[in-house]
Image (cartoon, rainbow, N blue to C red; front, side, top):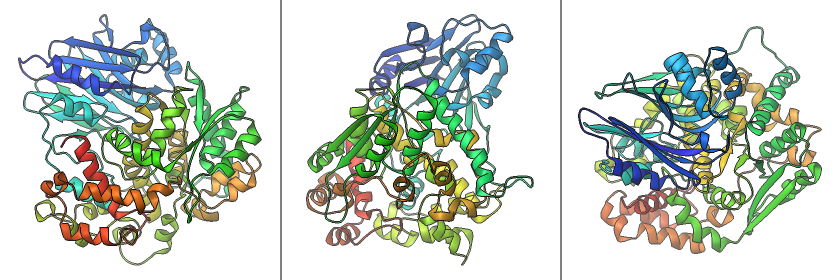
Length: 592
């Protein structure tokens, strides 16, 4: 896990090495253990390393193979690199390191652009072909690893976060009205290639981009998710369990074994993370290291799920680390956590992951986490609501249960110069109409897994853990497991309150209380209930001179929310006031 950056200069102008250094300084937290750079004519590459595989200097990056004429910078982990290495050795390639990075060099040389289809893992990478004078950028199938870029007439820059690109300079920082519409409709999700800033784009998941030295570029999708049944496929929950269980166990095992450092688990006390602990315990004789975080209670809600995580710890005798955080620390550290977001994210558990990652990074460099289980296996409460709602078009069924605000409210919220068409409805309508889904709900789950999850929980976990040089691995988003689950009938996924197949697999492995508990969300009472210091904090942001001079929000809308802060919630129970304050806080933090 690392931070990568680069600049390809078009024409005769040399790359700006000062810009590379500025980008590397903003990537230091992602890779605190080594810094490297490389320049070849119009191409400059930069890398910050977190050592996970082959801890020796031989695996430092940028990695160059002068004999093959290929250089690479890479962020992520390739779980099938031992198999690929063996294949490449069979083709006559010799290796000077023991990790996965060098496999990428040889794989590109052997198989060309198609090599990305052979990669099983999470990755964002840049490959420079010295002979062809060509740069290839690629991102994993489910967008677990981020890759941003800016393009000007004279150059293209790329990096693991927006902060690096902003530090390099020359970015158009005007707010994109289309992206704003997505951000405020889909709880801060802005699907690729857009970001909130007009001058920064992101490579979509499951795509690679080829950029020539003269500036010409082309983008290619290399993977699509089908959500269709096989006629000869299984029918019962028990039959599906015989397929899903070994696939999930293999995903967990791979993310344990492909590491030269210890691997822990973020244990929330929910079904997903608890099941990861159970499966890890099957894969190793060593005690599993687990980490849990809790907060102060509010009258309406408990601030931790320790009553459940403690049962899992006792069942598997894990090496457990429990963190209790006072409410004051949550607010004190909130601006710091927001500053580490590559894009503003409204999920209130972001600060929880940030504070937990800080503690976990003192013990391990790698953790497994349960993100993706709800989207892949149908765990959210709005899925049954959408399924039961048969009135109107696919878009209307989706919008009624998911959009944070409809277009009419969006127009009341933002000043007129930022209000255009109903861009989000158009995007969702097109996504749900794509072929390859057997039903409306199959299309919804596919859209969630391939698009929405990328810019919500997955990006949140990456940003918050990498802020402390901690690699988070997400076995529920193993692409072969996702492909298998996408063929499972939705009715089976949603029965028994959702995630029925995971409950079936967990039965007998986990305490019944953990399996049968109501679906919970990361408890953050200090931020969930908009009152006291949290309300004052948001009021100060929205009443600040910077916010007023920005001219983004209509003051009447802001005042209406401030007058009744806990009365204005989205359809999935998010605070509309927090949405406004978070974006403004992020913009101020980035000095925009």
